[in-house]
Length: 515
Image: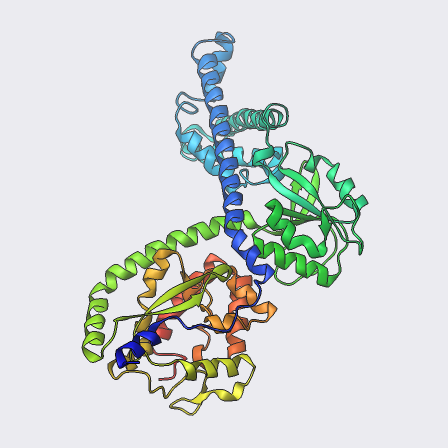
């Protein structure tokens, strides 16, 4: 084989050992985006319907105010009283409508379950909306008259909203077929407990949930059950389940498995109130038609946050490419002049749900060199051999190749400030990666994963992450994986912001690298 053919062969994707059977959790993780998207669509639809209804109620009240105050609909005496209590322009302008919507948002009147029809919560939303435009008249008209105006306006708007919110439920239950928009739901528990819960108002037909059946917790499942606990991953896939309700007793191990499977699939996980303690979830009580349910995962909120995260990723990556364009061009020229080969290095990595993609980096090694030494190092670290770290300049063990003869002369300093990773901004725009997330594993790492490490694949990998700002190459492989899993389980937008802020000094001062 000629030298040219050898180089081309070295650039071809490596053929690793036969892949193991697909882990059930990966299938659930791949289903999660579509499930989260449905949760978000349902929340957006609920908000749109309630907002339209609230504005319609305000428009009706506005016309009544005009008819009574100006057209003497109920007589001149009542018309004069209305105009005295509610000065012209008070309910006529849409400024109050804006204040009303803000007040209802602040007091949580656009949430799920019984929040949208809670009269007390609606009252406080109306009270806040009425108080906002009354601040200026307080000084001109006096406290007494303003209090009367406040009371009358709040009461009138509140009665209108309560009436129209309950009217929506009546139309929902008797006219509109809600089943296609309802969340596809299965119960987990004993046959009697599941049947009892299914008969309650929260799960009546044409409601917020459409019940597909129940998963029996008994060793031998009931003939009416759709399956046993071991069948849950396949049932979620087969029936497109979006909500799982626990209505029976589960052991700690069983409950943990159910929680992990539901989180992986992006399902809402609810439970009939019971005493439990479980790491990784923060229970909250959700009321639906008088039935208290304990929400273990707020997937609608997560879907909204992920949508914001994607917008931030696209904006951040586009801005990053625009700002660093001159630097990218300069680095490309330097790499091309220094050694033969392509400017960019494409390496297969594993993304969310086990999907494979090519990560982009500036080439820092000679073209066509073997990665066998790096694979041996990774294999040793995955086996838990913490003594494989190579010494850094200060003598500390570093879990990477510090004396790597594959690295070219000019490119030896690129990784010190992570400049070789700048092309990954393109991966972010493509949707393969995020600005913040776990480190994307190599295929031969992925094929040797233990079960708990699959949690790293629940979100998109990131250019930076908790591992990178917590010690980087000074950490063992297991510590790195544990940090990534910790990030996934405790993820929030605020955590992403903190990691991005901490990334700046880490990159500038080469913290955690083997320089």
